[in-house]
Image (cartoon, rainbow, N blue to C red; front, side):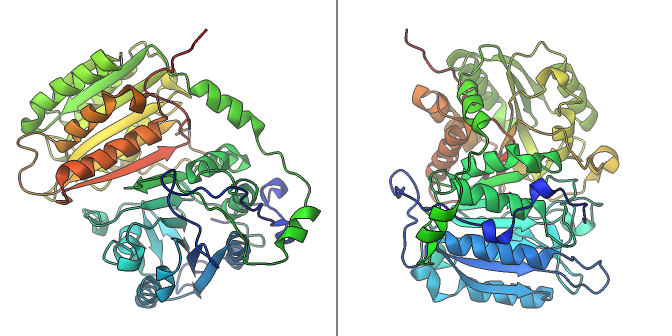
Length: 501
């Protein structure tokens, strides 16, 4: 989507100057990312010309900025492709995945920049559609040189438009791990681009990463990016799949002249308010609510366990569980929950059928996560405006016939009021349909009963849940866990820290 320029959103190419790491973060604190001469390998796929779609003028500037930023961070550009067909794109990505460089470096970065539609669909130059799941499939753990290494995917494309039948349903990649993904905008929204300067997303990434990657973990960089000037036009969607540790770029340039360039740069002071705000959000509230919804016959006792943990161990007021809800009944229960006297946070837990980003209710009606976001955004749920909202879903994979109402979920808000949301989404494959309960319940109970876990920021707490879930299923890989955050308070914890006088 082309946009008018806002000069403060764009930086000059010659001003890109990455601050170099003074301390290398390494295991057990973080993923190993210190290989030399290159930290990692980078692949860029940019689509400017299409058969029938409009030309993406300005995207060539994005490519230039990305190459400069990541080379200063110590990443080696392996391949940059432009205007390839779908078949050519897949082959180029497979060739990159097989490249021997992955035996020598500690991480991987992949960019895709194009027109897009709906959730995770982008167009290649022949107007064919690819999905992020297809990209993930190429770089899963079947690539031995990339196994257990951090893989960072960035998708810069619009995510609005209508639902197509080929988007329903699609299983997630079971063997994917150590993966971090950024979408430049939220589902249902456009991603802006200037015809001369490129996209504000890429420019702001350059500014934040060059000033802060020397000391900040990736999630902290995303929080700075989301709270900066970019948030005036679009919000970033950040996701993790089986991310085991913190990830630091540990930038160390391949350019021997970087020290001189750094000495010539003025000192940058970026968004000091974020730090003080984050410290305030570390104190978790006393008045907290949980809504339990269960549509799985085998998980009735799971609800009792979760109710006990959240009420007894964490001090939440628990509503439900509500059982076997239809689409309309689900919305009624949620609307009643929204009317409650909320404190400073809310958690919504749903066990039932589903796939991808869809909940399937007892009447086989599909409800997209985007609809949950809409119901709890700052406009439709003012009592929780600017307050943390956490969604935990356990979805048994459903591939039967469904009905789907596009009325609300396909609405397009260019500046979305969706924020302060965190998702832990678990998709369960197999035929037992959680008949004997869910391993997610066991993982949640083990982690949340430990004070040391619940006093950490939510992302770290839920990362521990994901890790425990993997340990419980002992390599069966029937439970696929993904973590997402949308402008979520970075240091919010489920349990308040203790203060000493």
